Length: 205
Image 1: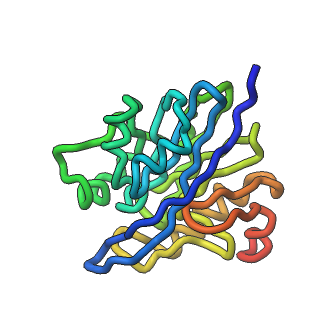
Image 2: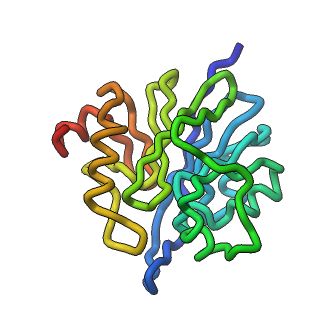
């Protein structure tokens, strides 16, 4: 039996909110085996994401939150793959800024839910702060957590824009992420990996 693995790519585009637009590079994480996989976030470019997928069956498009640089091509990716889009329902206001109300996601994510792929479980951790319905995906079998924009190398994600809360993101990180084993690798929405141990020491547990 094949063991699930993590594949990674970087795609470039823009992030827009509160009347400002920035150039950004987003990580795309794909978890699965040679047959099936899930895609974590859908930024900027469907063809670039499908190049990482490499012909495998996509069983889910899991969105860590609904900022436009994480969900902009999710509906197009769904159309190309037939995979459902999964998102926390508290992200509706941000989702609708990009897609309106006529286009929606397929399944709600809730704290403690499990997304299964290739014999591996990704457990949903609701970590509000960067966005109201922000989630992280913990894969203990892969010693990994996918944190979207909740936790980066060097600290918490940004909270200076609409729908964000600086105190709440720190509380989420301390309660939910710092409870994970220190050796857990943090795969972020932008930039380099880190570990729970390193960020716990930097922020203070």
